[in-house]
Amino acid sequence: MDFFEKLFDKAIEFAMTAGVRLIGAILIVIIGFMIVNKVTKAIKKGKHSEKIDKSALDFIISFANIALKIIIVLTAANYLGVPMTNVVAIIGSCGLAVGLALQGSLSNLAGGIMILIFKPCKDGDFISVNGLEGTVKEITILYTYLITPDNKTIVIPNATISNSAITNYSTSETRRVDVTIGVSYKSDIVKVRELLLEYAKGIENVEKDPEPAVVVAYGDSAVNMTIRAWVKNENYWPVAGEINLGLQKLLADNGIEIPYPQLDVHLDK
Figure 1 (cartoon, one colour):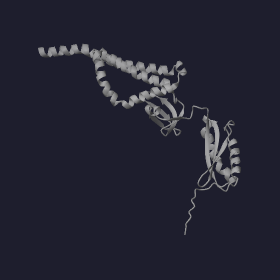
Figure 2 (figure 1 turned 90 degrees about the vertical axis):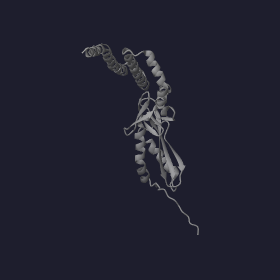
Figure 3 (figure 1 turned 30 degrees about the horizontal axis):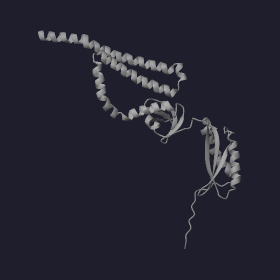
Figure 4 (figure 1 turned 30 degrees about the vertical axis):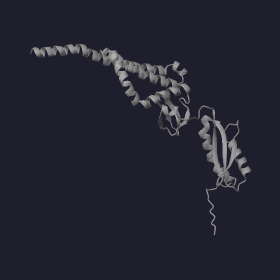
C-alpha cells in the first residue's frame, strides 16, 4: 500500500507541476497563434497599409507571421522549463541539415526578397516567365501566384522568377497589337497596304499617336502583311480580337486572295 500511495502522490505532484506547465505552454501556443493571425489580418486591412505596395505588404506579413509563430513556440518551450541554451544548441546543430534539406525553399526566400527590392513585377501586372503567362495575384515569401486569362492559378517559385528573364506587359501604359495576314503575290501590295491602314485606323480604341502601321514581309507562299496598332493595356485583347474578326471579310470584299500554303515541284526528265 505504501508503494501505491507514494506513486499516487508522485502523480499528483507531477500533475500539479509539469501538468500545469504543459497546459500553460499549450495555451501560450494557441492564444499566441490566434493573436498573430488577428494582428496580421488587421494590419493587412488597415488604412495605412493602402499606402504600401501590395506585393511588399503580402511578403512582409507572410514573413512576420512565420517569425512571430516561431518566437511563440520558443516561448512555450521556455515556459515548460526547457533551457534556451539547449534550444539554441539544438537549432544550431540542426541548422546545417535543415539548410541543406531546404535549399530550394531558402532560394525561394532569397528570390522573394529580390523581387521585393527590385520590383520586376507586382500585384496586378501581366507577366510572362519561362513560357508561363498570367496576372500576378500575390507574391509570398516563397511563391508567386499567377492567374491565367482562362482563370487558372499558376504557382511559381520565387527563385525561378528572380533568376529568369521576365516580360512585364504592364509597366507601360500602351502596348502594340501585331496581327499578320498573308495575301497572294498577284495582289497589288500598295493597295492592300492602304486598305489595311484605313481598316486599322477605324478600329475602336486604337491610338492615334503613334498611328497604326502596316509592315510587308515576303513568305514562301504569300506576302505577309502585319498590322501594328498601339492601344491602352486594358484594350489589348479586345482590339486584337476585333482586328482579326474583320480581316477575312475585308479582303474578300475587295477581291484580294488569301492563299493557302503551296509547294511547286519541278521534275527534270
